[in-house]
Image: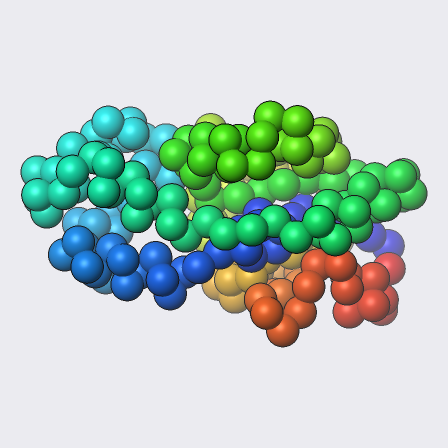
Length: 203
């Protein structure tokens, strides 16, 4: 029986433009396939280097201005459909589940979201969750096993009573290894609002 639901953020609630982001980075001469780039991006997502260090890395290695880099960095973020917030509020009202957010994200993105959504909407969204686990704040990132172990321990969750929803297969695969139920949601083909239809069997 599911008692806890852990949601990813990007492409679960807020839509992302991953393809466009990769293309815009490439236009700056930055490839996500480059090992050094990947390492720096991962370090930033885990809060192990600062925003200033990330931007200086782009400046020093790719001759990119801080304004251009920041604009491209945030270009991955798109809209937040209201139906998803309405769905989330309905789940909260049911009082049937403990709800958590677990996201690989960073202060640049969170700051953009706060400014784009407005403080009221962001607070309304955040208040739906018992805890808001952001990789940059807890210093772990998906798909590493330690991030799931941290969340389970920190919130006293039993894996077999927990569902994790994420759009990235490697992330749900790792969660499954720990005995967590998963839904690898396919963006644009499925929507989180379909949760209780798509996963009816485990509820």
